[in-house]
Amino acid sequence: MALFRFPDAGLFFSAVLMGGMVSLAPTGDAAAGSSEELHQLCRRLRNDDTLREYSPALRAGTIAAFKRLAPNAQGVPADDELKTQAIFRCMGGKVLVCFVGANLPCAKMNAARDNPGANRFCRENPNDDDVPAVAAGHDAVYSYRCRNGRAETTGELWKLDERGFAKTLWAEVPER
Image (cartoon, rainbow, N blue to C red; front, side, top):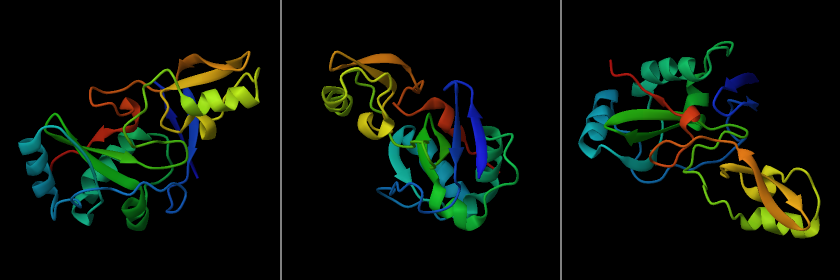
């Protein structure tokens, strides 16, 4: 188990870099056949929120990005862990990677302040000081508490990039 500190989030997250902890099925095209092909695709598309699967051709750049995201991690993920955890997308003509894990949402985030899951939780727990992520959603940008049966925001868990993804969870995959 690796412990990551994502400074902008202000929280510590433990992430298991093994398959099965969190499921996020990539959609659309799988990763291009080679690292160069995916970099070319992203240069052509500029911005594409399609989540793409890992390809062994991306290993070197993916490991470099992992080290930037988790500089204190002991070791690097094995190929089978990269296959189940590394997710790619295109932004600004660059290839970006995110590593799916416990409480590390690689999907586009829910930036709505009005959160139906938090509202339901607060109707049942009218004065709880913390609405759990299972109720608000792991993709919720805001944290919530309950006051008199209504959810209210208490802070911002994630800063978003211009495409609506958690900025601190994504790193550029360098070209070789």
